[in-house]
Image 1 (cartoon, rainbow, N blue to C red):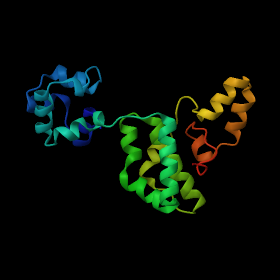
Image 2 (cartoon, rainbow, N blue to C red):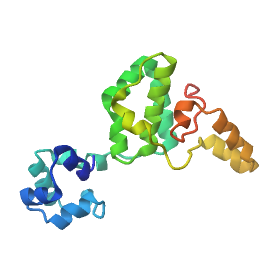
Image 3 (cartoon, helix red, strand yellow):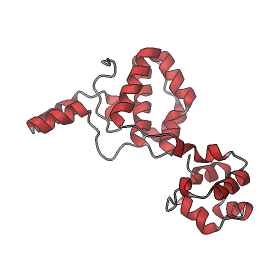
Image 4 (cartoon, rainbow, N blue to C red):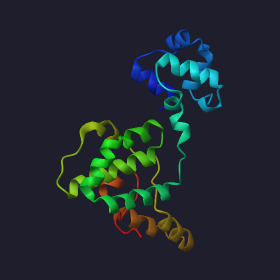
Length: 189
């Protein structure tokens, strides 16, 4: 979670944090506006901010400790997890983890929307009502469509736009809604 998100959740202004922590306002502002990366700040600065917010340094730096893998690997991991857990247990696991919101707040939009699409799709096919916690995200989508690597490779080899059109038309609606082209979530090895 970004410092800006933490401050918003705690209803603390950047100015107040500066006053509480002794960290210059310009530094706080630069961190919140992503001009300065929190992981590049001194340990003293991170400590002062964390202490003022009554959170751990680890929590404040949590976003920088998790490495982001390729989207293809992420999708594969999600599909393997689904296969391992079953539909209902997968939905429960994702909702309890709050990963949809966590990824969204990290600006990892493809991952966030992929998990939300997966939960919505599995809810539909299992006749489970949708979790309303993500209604604010359901009205958004990625700016550009993301196609599976196999479709992109096939398109590149054949230079045939129909490959992409066919993939788009046969995509699962819950994924297509977020501009993620996905046809088969169960065909994992």
